[in-house]
Length: 302
Ligand SMILES: Cc1cc2nc3c(=O)[nH]c(=O)nc-3n(C[C@H](O)[C@H](O)[C@H](O)COP(=O)(O)O)c2cc1C
Image 1 (spheres, helix red, strand yellow):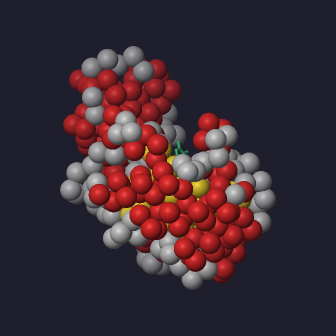
Image 2: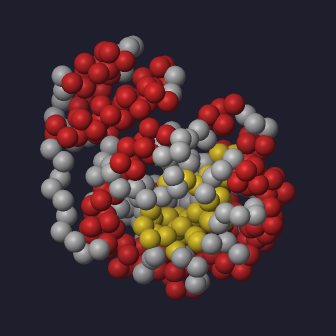
């Protein structure tokens, strides 16, 4: 997730049972130009595996070239983002706009599959652009399968819905039943049992977590336990939440510039403390913290 699932986030999530991660989306165009910010967003370490790179774009040749470059950089999977709803992405025809252009989508699939030699290519999309039935996702998933893609993740909302309302897990099921490649279900998994409910409603082969995992890395094990029909672990104590938040903070300061890490920590700390009393006062103080020591003191004093 853009601006959320950076290297520090992924390492904390892996320590809590996350099995596979994708980088936040990067534009194929920026990657090919070796844009410094884009390359920084793709930084990783050996223990951050398995890891997929996710590409955004609408030009088949450019997407193919960028995918080959990402493969060369050592990513384990190449994922194509056909789901981003942002106007600045959709207007030039990328992201969710491709739900309405199946022929262009197919040309991108063919180009990327031709250019990538060793690793699987996967698709991430939504149920539809405006149409909530799942028909548009189903069309893309069929074409993806025919072109040799290895799996498709379906976020159970349309582009029109953006991130609002509950994801439609039945619509994910309609895609699942139409293809034989694995379908990963995504959307509205906020607690462990939601993962099992998504799997039951859709028949999906795997579950991808989204916003529910922000500040809640315990969700990975809770979801896995629910999927395996095992008893859930005890929820983390406040002290445990704070300990893991401090670990997340240490990793932010290790891998990001001090300025960037401080900005990130304002959001990250509030994720971990969400719902607790006094979080509003904490947020105000964190927003004016200008040193790592001050940020640490605020968290330790919460
Ligand atoms: C801030 C934010 C950034 C996101 N960035 C990406 C992204 O880069 N690539 C992607 O495939 N999905 C991205 N998503 C979508 C999520 O991966 C997920 O599909 C969506 O939030 C639905 O799941 P949820 O209801 O569990 O949050 C983003 C979502 C949010 C809220």
